[in-house]
Amino acid sequence: MKTRLKSISFLLVLAFVALTGVNAKVASELSLTVESDPELEIERWMVQDDYWMPNSVEVTPEVDEVLELEQWMIDDCYWK
Image (cartoon, rainbow, N blue to C red; front, side, top):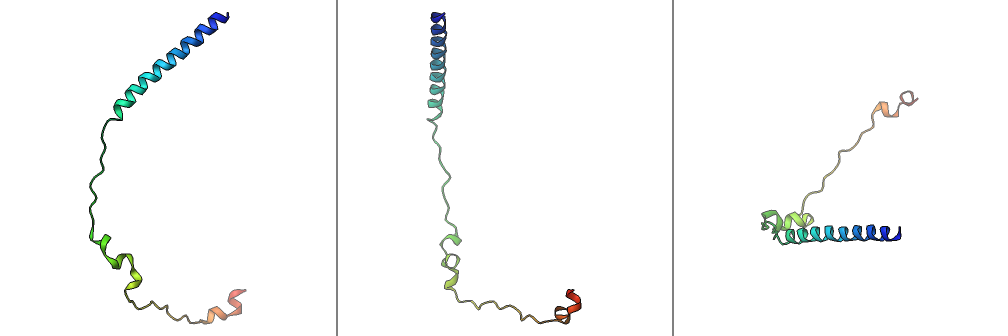
C-alpha cells in the first residue's frame, strides 16, 4: 500500500514538473518579442507658459451680481 502511494505521488510530481517545463518553454519563446511604444509628439499647448501658469496673466476678477431681498423672502406667512 505504501509503495503504491509513493509511486502515484512520484508520478504526479513528475507530471507536474513535465507540464510546468513545457509551459516555461512556451513562455520563454513569447517573451522574446520586442514591444515598442509610439513616438511621443510635443504639441503646442505642452510648451505654452500660459497653459501651465494661468495666474501669471493678469485677468480682471469675476464679480458676482449683488443679491437683492424680495418680499417673499422676508414674508412670515410664506415660511410657515
